[in-house]
Amino acid sequence: MNIGIVGCGHWGPNYVRNLLPLEGVARVFCCDTSQQALSRLKANYHSVETLTDYKDLLGNKDVDAVVVATPSATHFTIAKETVLAGKHLLVEKPLAACVEQAEKIVVEGDRQRRVVMVGHTFVYNPAVIAMKEIMASGLLGEIYYINGTRVNLGLFQPDINVAWDLAPHDISILRFVLGMEPVSASARGEAYVQRTRGLHDVAFLSFFFPNGVMADIRVSWLDPCKIRRYTVVGSAKMLVYDDLDPENKIVIYDKGVDVPPYSDTEAEFRLSYRNGNAVPYPVEWVEPLEVECQHFLDCIRQGTEPRSNSRMGLQVVRILEAAQHSLLNGGSREVIGETRGFCAHRTRRDSGPRCQDLCLRQSVRL
Image (cartoon, rainbow, N blue to C red; front, side, top):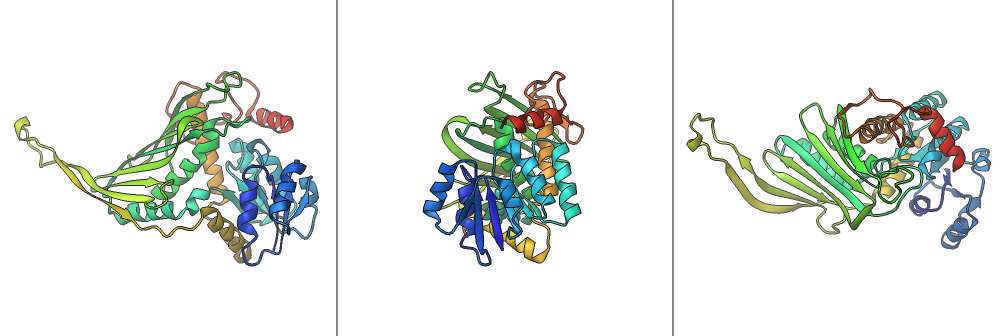
C-alpha cells in the first residue's frame, strides 16, 4: 500500500515515523508547502518521496490512502477532495470546523465506499482502553462523575480556540469509556493572549450524560505545568489515569463514602469513610499512534469500519458546536444537536455570517 501524508510540519512527521515500519506499506509520499519541513523529513527518512502540492498527490493513481495532518481550517477541503479522488482517508481531529462540513465528509465517504477515519488517538491508547474495561467490569461500582485536566504552555493555534484544539481528545475519551453520548454541554472560558482574535486559551467544559454522570474537563494553553490526568469517582472505588506517568498510568484507589441505612434521627446518621490501598493497574504499553496507523491499514484491507470512524468524528464536532454556543453565551447549558452555526471560527455570540461562510473565509485566509 502507498500512503500519502499531507501536512508535515508539527504532527505529520509522527505519522511518517509510525507508518514506515508497518508491514505492507510500500511507499510514503510527504506533502507540505514548506520545503524546509520536507528537507528535514527527507534527512531523517531517506525513502520518503516529497512534493509541495497535495493535488498532485491526489492525482497520483499509485497512492491508495491519504493522511491529512494540516491546520484544522483546511481539513474539510482536503478531506473531501481526498475521498472524491477515490483515496482512503485518515484526517486529524477535529474532522471539520462545523457540523455542516463534517456531514458532507461522512456522506462522500459512504458514497465513494472509502474508509474514512478520524485521528482520535486516545481511543487507541492502551491506558484508556484499560480504563474502559475497568469501568465496564463494575469494579468502581456506580460511576458518579469524571474530572479531566489537559493543560500546558502552548501550542497556541491561529484559527481555533483551545476547546476545539484540545477537547476533541477528551470528548472522544468520554464517549469511548462511558459507551454513551452526552445529552447536553456547558462551557466557560476566556481569551487572554489572543484577546483581539477572540480565541479562548482556557476553557472549563461540562458534559452531562443520560445516566446522571457528569464530566468536567479543563483545557488550557496557558498553564505552567503539562498535565494530562483523569479522575473517575465511583461508589465502590476510584481511578486515576495519568497519561504522563511512565510507570503507573492507572491507579485504583479503594476509597469512598458509605451511607448507612436511612434514619430519621440526625444523631444516628453517620457517614462511613473508606481509605484503603492505592493499587497500580498493569497496562501493556504500545504507542497509541502506532496502533491507530495499524488499525487504519487493517480497515482498508478488510473493508471494516474504524473504531474512530467518520460518524464518531461528526458526533465530536456536534458536541463541540454545543460547547462553543455555551462558551459564547455565558456558560448556558446547551442540548447537543440543537445548536448549529457555532463553528470553530465563530468568536462572537451575536448574529453574523453563516457558519459555512466563516469556515470558507478561514480556509481561504490560510
